[in-house]
Length: 221
Ligand SMILES: [Zn+2]
Image 1 (cartoon, protein in one colour):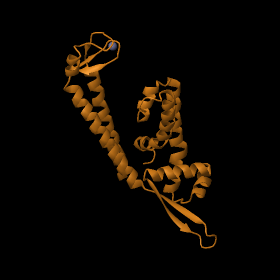
Image 2 (cartoon, helix red, strand yellow):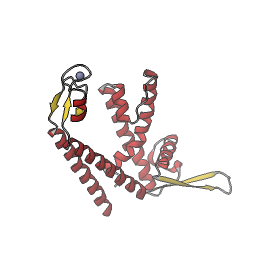
Image 3 (cartoon, rainbow, N blue to C red):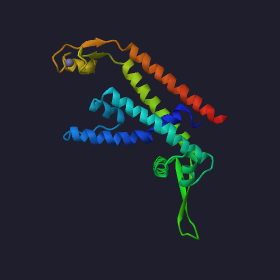
Image 4 (cartoon, rainbow, N blue to C red):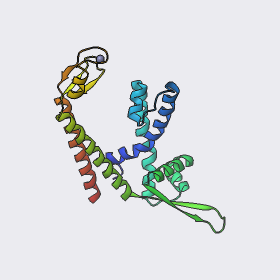
């Protein structure tokens, strides 16, 4: 279950968040007077990041999930409970193991019990992975994505769209006629055939559904 693409996608959130914070800081430096966008994709677009940087972020996300987060979860699933034992087993640095454990805790997919060693008076934290919660979250995320895709599909199917040939704007019929079929740049808007886009959304819906089905089926085994 842990190597399922939907699990990896869900765990990517942990690393995405870090990149998002970095990009937010960068945006604030560049555009101190503008409202900082939310979400990594919106930030990438707003900052107009070069392809090379986008690739670097994508690689870092994938690598951290596969080489750090998943091995730590695997260790937890094998019944290893303390950060030190996880670090020894996975050969991942202790401070990184701790950082990831707390991030998993923030996402509610790991939890710990604290106990005091009667001799040393030190606290020990025994960690557990909450597989059921992760499964629940993945289902919830997919349902949300499907709802959004269906809403987009409905909007595309029930409207006509007009675009600036220079790519500045895309309006539905009502907005386009309010603007007298002119772009802010002065160019005349042209009708856009969105049937390829509709086909693309339908494909995404199909794919998301089948990914979710095979994920849930894999849990039965
Ligand atoms: Zn224009």
